[in-house]
Image (cartoon, rainbow, N blue to C red):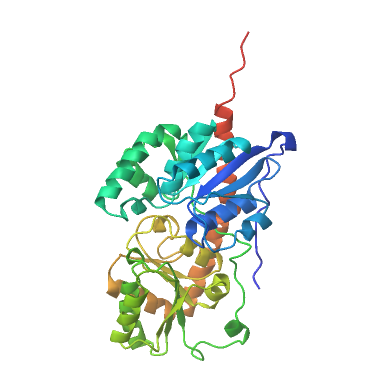
Amino acid sequence: MAERRIAPLPSTGRQSDDVVHVMHLIPRYVNDGTCRLVNSLVKFTDRRRFRIFVGILSRDEVSTQPLVDMGAVVVQLDMRGFADLSATARLARQLRDNGIQILHTHRIRPDLVGRISGRWAGVPINVSTQHFTGEWDERGRLVGWLVRLLYRLTLPLTQKIVNISRGEMEVMEAEGVPPAMMQVIHNGTDGEIFFPAGTQRERAGAEEGERPPVVGCVAFLSKRKGINYLIDAFRHVADRHPGARLEIVGDGAERSGLQQQIDALGLEKNVTLMGNQVDVPRLMNGFDVVALPSVWEPFGLVVAEAMACGKPVVATNVGGIPEIVEHGRTGLLVPPAKVEPLAEALSALLESRELRTRLGEAGRQRFLEAFDSRIMAARYQAMYESLLNARKPVPDAN
């Protein structure tokens, strides 16, 4: 097993009487990029300085016990619909009763609800992390227009907008958000969960050619993820590598259509839709190559997770992905919605163990230097401190 080189927890050296109460407000608690980011902030934020609360607008069947085990105080708000004023009032009461000093919202519904509740409760600092502005238009043009209007009207109630990539920051600038309000903090991956680990196949010491190569993809099955292009590309990969397998981890609205595509192409023996899986790190370590064929990707957390595991990556040159992957050094980048370049990149990696090893090792080093969750948490803490310091009264020169 490879050594896990993890930096020490960031510490401000403050004492307990200086503890600042921070609430992260999320739409629901599920296994998506937003909640993985919040998990990391709960886990790695310095508890000598910050006490962490997590407010959840809508209750799901997923247990919140992991948050509790990491020391967070969980507040379930049971919000019913976007305009549930009673839930908005409950949130304001929780903010006030718990002495929240920083309200940190994630995604559009928490942004809007949190800004209003925060103002009612007198919360001094409001921070928003923008995970994916594309969600604004997911319910149609009219709803998208209304969301933009409400976002701009409530924007003065926020002190800082955090973008998870420069690509998302450019989108927010186009939406009219002043650059001075914004800051880029890349998402991080928990290096205590994602790290190079020997799989059963590797421990068996199988030489190249003794087992079929496996390409893995971990994604929510939506049109934005471009899985249909990956399946089309794998038809060409399978022609050159008849035993090669593509394992797609995740679920979503496109699953039935993708299965029909697999059947129509005669790839039933090569491509498997595995659905949602609990042990993604173990699966990731079993892949020879990890692919992310997104048509648009605000960041691409799965890419960072694959690099943390030392896996070579093929991904599209969109959104925040080029900020993670340096083409030819830490992975391979291809244009979106193009089957042939994707197939060529996958085949090139499957045909060269040396290339896979070189890109995987360089990607692992890139993760350690820039995308470990502890680095991300330290950057968020520095931002919190900057906002807190800006509110301190200036000493009288006299």
